[in-house]
Structure formats: structure tokens, C-alpha cells
Figure (cartoon, rainbow, N blue to C red):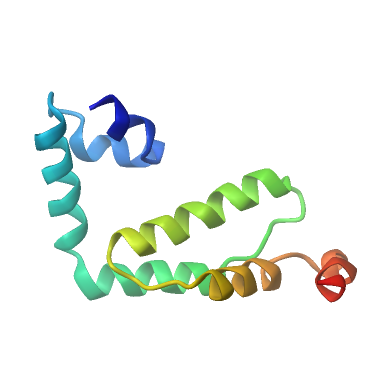
Length: 104
């Protein structure tokens, strides 16, 4: 159970907060994500494509949000290649990161 709790986003803890063993917690997570299917995947994919870094927030905060969306998308069965994720990450950066993008 400890392994599950330590590897999910804080916002996901509510999904299995009433379960006391790993098997039940895992089943609750699986049921939660599988029931949304394509609609849930579309929601996460749209969030990923519309994501833009807020210039007033740190890169760390932005990257955690980005990583959370990618992880959620993959958790519902969405396919996101490393190349696609990298492209989305770079295009979501503010304009002052253009020299950084060009250097890659």
C-alpha cells in the first residue's frame, strides 16, 4: 500500500482513501481510470496541448503540472511518445525560452 501511495499524485489519493490494502486500492484506481475511457483520454490530451507555462511560476511547478498530465494520460491508456512529450514541453514554454529551444 505504501508503494501505491508514494507513487500517485496527491490529487489521486482521494480515489482510494477508504481502502486499507494494496489490492483494493489498486482496484479502485483501475476502476476510476477505466470508466472514463476515451472521454478521459481526450480531456488529458486537450490539457496537454493547451498547456502553457505561466511566466510568474517556476519551471519546477510547470514541469510537475506537465508531468502530471502526461502520467494521467498514460494511466488512462493514452499513448504519448517521449518525442511528442518533449515537443509539447518545449512549445509550452514562454517566449523568453526561444533561444533554449533553438539550441536543441
